[in-house]
Length: 221
Length: 248
Ligand SMILES: Nc1ncnc2c1ncn2[C@@H]1O[C@H](COP(=O)(O)OP(=O)(O)OP(=O)(O)O)[C@@H](O)[C@H]1O
Ligand SMILES: [Mg+2]
Image 1 (cartoon, chains in turn purple, blue):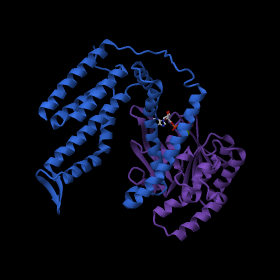
Image 2: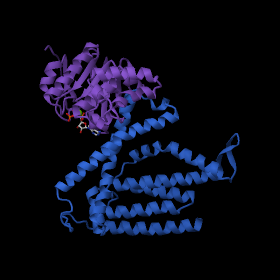
Image 3: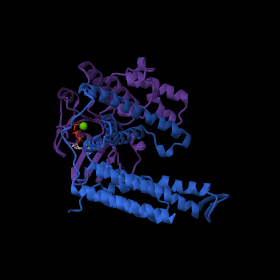
Image 4: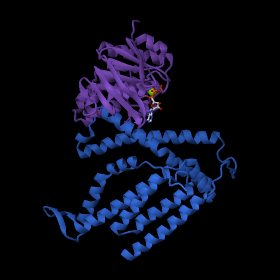
């Protein structure tokens, strides 16, 4: 569970984005975060992942305080997909992109290959294994980014506008990935503007506008 | 006359910055360098730069500064040893002095650069053009200035993304760390290349350089305060330069 307790945050002093915010995100459900542009959705997502730290109040990820725990450790609990997938693509091939983190951590090569193969399979990327990530389409890049996060086996995902720029078919593939993840017991917070996407997956919807939680609603599809 | 000089002509700011950074190069004396640093900080404050931000930037360089001082001590074989580990003189008084000199110079140049960021980039181009610098050149300079903060933001995002993938930079041994940095370079380089490509297309579309001569709607004019500040900077520059010569 991710909980925000009395959280205040600003980018620039004197211009607070959130003030005294309290919020709990259940760990097994799919929670959508919706609201107008500039309402603070991305900021909220980054606070939840520990990418941004609140100036006052605490954010707890499974009772770990994001202010004191190193990002590398938080990353093992929460996977975060940036709004621009390019910012989290590092390697020269799809295969290396998924595996390099493990090799930096001194896992034996054989073990890495097994894990990487499984993940490639799960995300339907096997045929692209030797391709440069930069040559992928937007939808494929995004799948790759999620796949690469998966090797750390986080128990929770935060996805920032994952459907932007995807056609219906790619959205269906993404939906499949999301359903698959949920069956593995992984919870998610998804930021989205896509009404039908929200209706399809949401179990809880949080509306953020002007730095306030305007509405929290349980959802029964 | 008010003391808030935020509206100074960008050319005036450029002159001040040039004076300050040349002083940083010419001065040897520690006290003189300190004085120049103080002057620079005052200029930053008066032109509306943020001192707080500047100091946090300084903080990031502290390790580099310490390294500079130690390196100067190890490689200058003179002076009294202040700190010695085995056969290596880690800190000597001459080394300390030279190290401090270098550090102060760094600080002055960094602080002086902040003065330029208080000027609007369009105004900087306009200023350079009115100084007869070719437009293309002036344009490139401002693009560089404009894109730097963007790049910085992207770099921090990328670094965060890498750490979230479970890479703890502090725990990786030094050799592997180099490999890690090479992974960081990839997204940065691609984003720079993509930006450059997009920008050049956008510029072509707007008929950049369709005519050799450009006219500008906005022209810069020196105000009385600009003349005053320029003369004052020149005088101070001369004075400090003379002091530097005498003291060296
Ligand atoms: N790095 C930053 N520095 C300063 N202000 C920022 C920064 N990032 C966002 N903001 C401001 O914070 C507010 C909330 O932005 P945020 O990106 O969280 O909104 P959002 O709900 O994700 O919008 P969108 O739907 O467009 O993605 C906005 O007013 C924005 O201008
Ligand atoms: Mg956003």
